[in-house]
Amino acid sequence: MEINKKFSDKALEDFELIDKAIEGDEKAYASLMNRYRKSVYHTILKMIRNVDDAEDLTIEAFAKAFKNLHKFKKDYTFSTWLFRIATNNTIDFIRKKKLDTMSIHSGITTKDGDEVTFNIKDSGRDPQEEAIRSQKIEIVRQFVSLLPPKYQRLVKLRYFDELSYDEIAKELNAPLGTVKAQLHRARELLYDLVKNKKNVI
Image 1: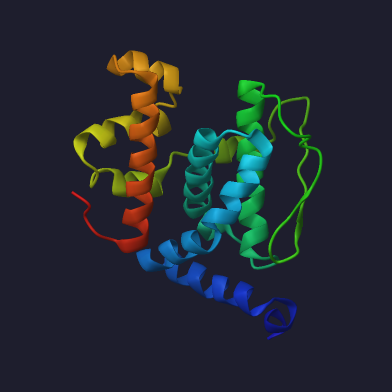
Image 2: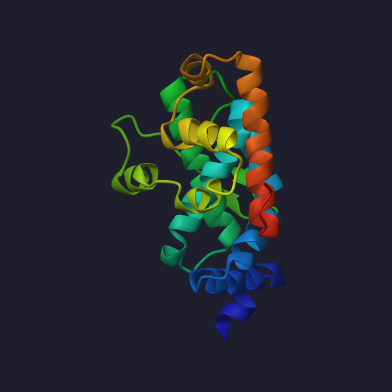
Protein backbone atom coordinates (compact mmCIF):
# COMPACT_ATOMS: atom_id res chain seq x y z
CA MET A 1 0.00 0.00 0.00
CA GLU A 2 1.07 3.56 -0.65
CA ILE A 3 0.68 4.38 3.01
CA ASN A 4 3.61 2.09 3.82
CA LYS A 5 5.92 4.07 1.53
CA LYS A 6 4.82 7.45 2.82
CA PHE A 7 5.28 6.98 6.56
CA SER A 8 7.97 5.80 8.97
CA ASP A 9 7.73 2.52 10.87
CA LYS A 10 6.82 4.41 14.03
CA ALA A 11 4.01 6.24 12.25
CA LEU A 12 2.67 2.94 10.92
CA GLU A 13 2.79 1.48 14.42
CA ASP A 14 0.82 4.50 15.62
CA PHE A 15 -1.81 3.82 12.98
CA GLU A 16 -2.18 0.25 14.24
CA LEU A 17 -2.51 1.47 17.82
CA ILE A 18 -5.14 4.00 16.76
CA ASP A 19 -7.19 1.28 15.06
CA LYS A 20 -7.02 -0.84 18.21
CA ALA A 21 -7.89 2.12 20.44
CA ILE A 22 -10.95 2.95 18.36
CA GLU A 23 -12.05 -0.65 18.81
CA GLY A 24 -11.85 -0.16 22.59
CA ASP A 25 -8.38 -1.46 23.41
CA GLU A 26 -7.31 0.59 26.46
CA LYS A 27 -3.73 -0.70 26.22
CA ALA A 28 -3.49 0.98 22.84
CA TYR A 29 -4.50 4.29 24.40
CA ALA A 30 -1.83 3.80 27.05
CA SER A 31 0.81 3.00 24.43
CA LEU A 32 0.03 6.17 22.48
CA MET A 33 0.25 8.25 25.64
CA ASN A 34 3.53 6.64 26.70
CA ARG A 35 5.04 7.36 23.27
CA TYR A 36 4.29 11.06 23.25
CA ARG A 37 3.63 12.23 26.80
CA LYS A 38 7.10 13.67 27.42
CA SER A 39 7.46 15.38 24.06
CA VAL A 40 3.99 16.93 24.29
CA TYR A 41 4.71 18.12 27.82
CA HIS A 42 8.03 19.74 26.87
CA THR A 43 6.46 21.40 23.83
CA ILE A 44 3.74 22.93 25.99
CA LEU A 45 6.23 23.91 28.68
CA LYS A 46 8.22 25.90 26.11
CA MET A 47 5.07 27.83 25.27
CA ILE A 48 3.84 28.70 28.76
CA ARG A 49 6.88 28.22 31.01
CA ASN A 50 4.87 26.92 33.94
CA VAL A 51 5.27 23.32 35.11
CA ASP A 52 1.85 22.92 36.74
CA ASP A 53 -0.04 24.37 33.78
CA ALA A 54 2.05 22.33 31.33
CA GLU A 55 1.12 19.13 33.15
CA ASP A 56 -2.55 20.09 33.12
CA LEU A 57 -2.49 20.95 29.44
CA THR A 58 -0.71 17.70 28.60
CA ILE A 59 -3.57 15.73 30.12
CA GLU A 60 -6.09 17.89 28.27
CA ALA A 61 -4.28 17.39 24.96
CA PHE A 62 -4.39 13.61 25.21
CA ALA A 63 -7.98 13.63 26.41
CA LYS A 64 -9.09 15.73 23.45
CA ALA A 65 -7.05 13.66 21.01
CA PHE A 66 -8.49 10.41 22.33
CA LYS A 67 -12.01 11.84 22.26
CA ASN A 68 -11.57 12.67 18.57
CA LEU A 69 -9.54 9.62 17.58
CA HIS A 70 -12.28 8.36 15.27
CA LYS A 71 -11.88 11.57 13.25
CA PHE A 72 -8.16 11.07 12.67
CA LYS A 73 -7.22 10.72 9.00
CA LYS A 74 -4.11 8.83 7.97
CA ASP A 75 -3.08 11.58 5.59
CA TYR A 76 -0.42 12.66 8.08
CA THR A 77 1.23 11.25 11.19
CA PHE A 78 -0.48 10.90 14.54
CA SER A 79 2.26 13.00 16.13
CA THR A 80 1.50 15.92 13.79
CA TRP A 81 -2.20 15.71 14.62
CA LEU A 82 -1.57 15.34 18.37
CA PHE A 83 0.88 18.24 18.53
CA ARG A 84 -1.56 20.45 16.64
CA ILE A 85 -4.28 19.68 19.19
CA ALA A 86 -1.84 20.30 22.04
CA THR A 87 -0.60 23.61 20.65
CA ASN A 88 -4.06 24.88 19.73
CA ASN A 89 -5.32 24.02 23.21
CA THR A 90 -2.34 25.80 24.74
CA ILE A 91 -2.93 28.86 22.56
CA ASP A 92 -6.50 28.88 23.82
CA PHE A 93 -5.16 28.77 27.37
CA ILE A 94 -2.74 31.60 26.61
CA ARG A 95 -5.55 33.72 25.20
CA LYS A 96 -7.63 33.11 28.29
CA LYS A 97 -4.83 33.81 30.75
CA LYS A 98 -3.06 36.43 28.63
CA LEU A 99 0.28 34.93 29.54
CA ASP A 100 3.63 36.46 28.71
CA THR A 101 5.15 33.64 26.69
CA MET A 102 7.31 32.83 23.76
CA SER A 103 6.09 33.92 20.34
CA ILE A 104 3.32 31.56 19.30
CA HIS A 105 3.48 32.46 15.63
CA SER A 106 6.49 30.19 15.14
CA GLY A 107 6.35 26.52 14.26
CA ILE A 108 7.34 23.42 16.21
CA THR A 109 9.07 20.39 14.76
CA THR A 110 8.03 16.98 16.08
CA LYS A 111 10.38 14.05 16.58
CA ASP A 112 9.26 12.71 13.20
CA GLY A 113 10.47 15.92 11.58
CA ASP A 114 7.00 17.25 10.88
CA GLU A 115 6.50 21.00 11.13
CA VAL A 116 3.46 22.02 13.15
CA THR A 117 2.37 25.60 12.58
CA PHE A 118 -0.40 27.44 14.33
CA ASN A 119 -1.82 30.93 14.14
CA ILE A 120 -3.98 33.11 16.34
CA LYS A 121 -7.04 34.60 14.72
CA ASP A 122 -8.22 37.97 15.94
CA SER A 123 -11.88 37.21 15.34
CA GLY A 124 -12.21 34.38 17.85
CA ARG A 125 -12.03 30.62 17.40
CA ASP A 126 -12.92 28.80 14.23
CA PRO A 127 -15.64 26.11 14.47
CA GLN A 128 -13.16 23.23 14.69
CA GLU A 129 -11.23 24.83 17.54
CA GLU A 130 -14.49 25.66 19.32
CA ALA A 131 -15.61 22.05 18.97
CA ILE A 132 -12.36 20.77 20.43
CA ARG A 133 -12.54 23.16 23.37
CA SER A 134 -16.17 22.33 24.19
CA GLN A 135 -15.54 18.61 24.49
CA LYS A 136 -15.27 17.12 27.97
CA ILE A 137 -12.31 15.06 29.05
CA GLU A 138 -14.06 11.72 28.71
CA ILE A 139 -10.95 9.54 28.71
CA VAL A 140 -9.67 11.04 31.97
CA ARG A 141 -13.15 10.73 33.48
CA GLN A 142 -13.04 6.96 33.01
CA PHE A 143 -10.14 6.71 35.41
CA VAL A 144 -11.05 9.39 37.95
CA SER A 145 -13.43 7.11 39.85
CA LEU A 146 -10.48 4.86 40.71
CA LEU A 147 -8.61 7.64 42.52
CA PRO A 148 -8.82 8.15 46.29
CA PRO A 149 -11.76 10.49 47.11
CA LYS A 150 -9.65 13.56 47.90
CA TYR A 151 -7.94 13.31 44.52
CA GLN A 152 -11.24 12.72 42.71
CA ARG A 153 -12.53 16.05 43.99
CA LEU A 154 -9.35 17.90 43.04
CA VAL A 155 -9.40 16.51 39.52
CA LYS A 156 -13.08 17.39 39.13
CA LEU A 157 -12.52 20.98 40.27
CA ARG A 158 -9.44 21.46 38.09
CA TYR A 159 -10.34 19.63 34.86
CA PHE A 160 -14.11 19.45 34.73
CA ASP A 161 -15.08 22.65 36.55
CA GLU A 162 -11.95 24.40 35.21
CA LEU A 163 -11.15 26.26 38.41
CA SER A 164 -7.76 27.91 38.89
CA TYR A 165 -5.39 26.78 41.64
CA ASP A 166 -6.35 29.82 43.72
CA GLU A 167 -10.05 29.09 43.26
CA ILE A 168 -9.57 25.46 44.30
CA ALA A 169 -7.64 26.55 47.40
CA LYS A 170 -10.51 28.85 48.38
CA GLU A 171 -13.13 26.20 47.60
CA LEU A 172 -11.39 23.62 49.78
CA ASN A 173 -10.14 26.12 52.35
CA ALA A 174 -6.65 24.67 51.88
CA PRO A 175 -3.19 26.21 51.41
CA LEU A 176 -2.27 26.86 47.77
CA GLY A 177 0.90 24.79 48.14
CA THR A 178 -1.10 21.82 49.38
CA VAL A 179 -3.51 22.07 46.45
CA LYS A 180 -0.64 22.14 43.94
CA ALA A 181 1.13 19.21 45.60
CA GLN A 182 -2.00 17.08 45.75
CA LEU A 183 -2.93 17.87 42.15
CA HIS A 184 0.57 16.87 41.10
CA ARG A 185 0.08 13.56 42.90
CA ALA A 186 -3.36 13.14 41.34
CA ARG A 187 -1.84 13.60 37.88
CA GLU A 188 0.81 10.98 38.64
CA LEU A 189 -1.87 8.53 39.74
CA LEU A 190 -3.91 9.18 36.61
CA TYR A 191 -0.90 8.54 34.41
CA ASP A 192 -0.21 5.37 36.37
CA LEU A 193 -3.79 4.22 35.86
CA VAL A 194 -3.60 4.80 32.12
CA LYS A 195 -0.23 3.10 31.85
CA ASN A 196 -0.84 0.09 34.06
CA LYS A 197 -4.63 -0.32 34.03
CA LYS A 198 -4.85 -1.10 37.73
CA ASN A 199 -6.58 0.25 40.80
CA VAL A 200 -4.17 2.41 42.78
CA ILE A 201 -6.25 2.58 45.98
